[in-house]
Image 1: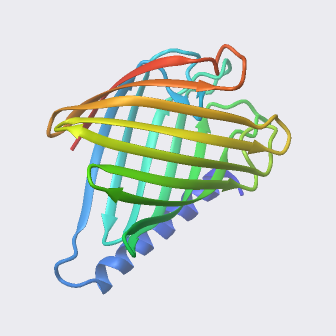
Image 2 (image 1 turned 120 degrees about the vertical axis):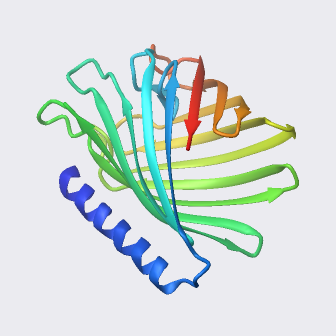
Amino acid sequence: MSFTNLRAATAAAAVAALIGAASSASAQTTVDAGINVSVVSDYVFRGFSQTNEETALQAGFDMSAGSFYAGVWTSQVDFGDDTDWETDLYMGYRSDVAGFTVDAGLIGYGYFGAPAGADYDYAEAKLAVSRAVGPASVGVAAYYSPDFFGVDDEATYYEVNGAVTPFERLSLSGAYGKQQLDVSDDYTTWNVGLTYTLYEHAGIDFRYHDTDVDGPLSDERYVASLKVVY
């Protein structure tokens, strides 16, 4: 399926899910929406720079109705060709089960300006489970794609993650992941960082990223970001 068709299908399904959730929920259930804008010193995805180690402007829109959610997110990218923007569409269902938060969803990744035949666009299914323990949380997640980015087809990404808030406004978080690919070599990636809430709608993050891949775009790096949410 092309990204154009995937985008239409995802958007239609997301709207249908949200309308259905809103209409069948109780009178107290509302549809919530929000926007976010970020500036990052380097856009890193699963350990690899997506902007050739340059800064990026990012923005997103999210909406939810009860346990259903959907949204769109976009970022500048630089792959050394004419590709200039990544736009992701996602939808899912998040609920609490026996003290755990379970999140199942679909994500479509689209790349605008990509050269013909680059085969960058792809989709993933996601399943994540997390649990809060006092000021901390721990979680695991898995992502599966039947037709991954570029030359790879089937791909699976596994991750364990955690976060703790030792002081008001300050949190420490990290993740360790394994990317399995059917053509390219498998690799592991990890990150750890601090997030500080400046005020109700803004925060800064300073994070260390690394992988076990030796390369200019996958070596260790420090990334700073500023995010505003409304």
